[in-house]
Length: 299
Image (cartoon, rainbow, N blue to C red; front, side):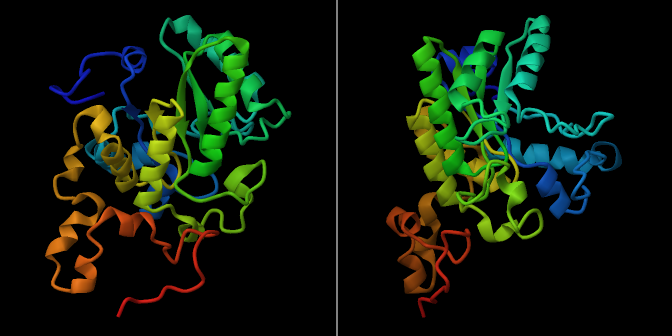
């Protein structure tokens, strides 16, 4: 949780969320550790926890330094059956998990890998949220499989479903760090770039600042990322929401907000980029399918 001295350093997650505080989640472990040579793509199993604990610990420290409040354990696909059912594409399974977890008398947060189309049995996002809250979940939302834009659409539908049912819950969102508006119900696993060509779809830090603001404006207070979210993406969330949180993360000590550090660059056309308007309106030659076909140098 938050370092000593920061607001809410010793409060639990529900206390923080109920006070309106922003809780920032962590980011990608599987895909990020695969890129670094510690995880085998395909099975995505977490042997690195045993074989290379220092690498896992270092990534946790990077997310923490970037602004994350919550660090999740790297245990995905660690069960004997290798999670063949892909937990939590089906609300029925998620409800079972909530019911079991409620026996611990701890707050239960549950996110589903679903799009605005709903789960694999066509249960709508709104109905999924209702069932999860009725089962005892205090925090509900979505994670993985879909990019920020798609995930925020799903969150809005979950929120509307809860409102119609007269139920309340805190909202949580941890999307991919990739743009995926063209993927189907299964998410990014169906894209031709999955899993080794996803760099062409990578969201920029400015995309993530926009996502963080939109999530906050929707009423989401637990905001983080999943596959493809590097520490600098988490830093972007922390910087965008610094006014609400009241502080910047340690990773911002050497990072000029909105390119402000460029105002000392030796090249005048680079100095001209030291402003928010430039970066907010940039169309980078990546980020498929939104990128222009060519990148045109300034000089």
